[in-house]
Image (cartoon, rainbow, N blue to C red):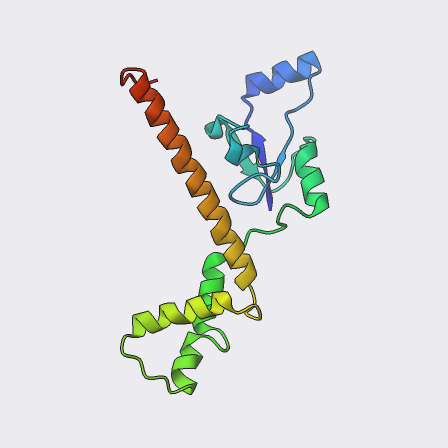
Amino acid sequence: MGYLMKDLTPKGARRRAVRGEPQPPAHLWDGEDTACRMWSTGGISRHTSYRVSDTPEGRPICGVCEEKTRAGSAPAEPFDVLGWCRDLVHGVGGFRDYEEYEKAVFEDRDVSLVSFVVHALANPRCAGSETMLRAIRERRERNTLLELLQEQASEVREDDGGEEW
């Protein structure tokens, strides 16, 4: 977990200090989005003018980020998808153990590996499977929303006589 904050120019920081304006808040960052979801929903629109830091650098924390984290609706740490996949193949009881100790006979090893992953995701006792499924659902929702917005934008362009906007 880190902090996402507006990267002020030295001139902008001095201007704020002279006027007595507070520093813009630091948002809680999980590696993909802010806890308040402003990054993914467009509330923070100029992504290039923000940076990630390990500390809030004396800035106030975004109130919504703080509240959502306190309420438990924001993940404390981002889910390590690749680590989960590595454990599923190489960990105790993983696919490699299955191959070696179950004396499984495969027609197609790749198909068997995919089948093993699907069974692991369906198993409620498989550590991390619920978190992995939640991450997949969230990614699908984001992609569906992005596709919808892109379709709407192209329809608007077509209605405008094809002009770019």
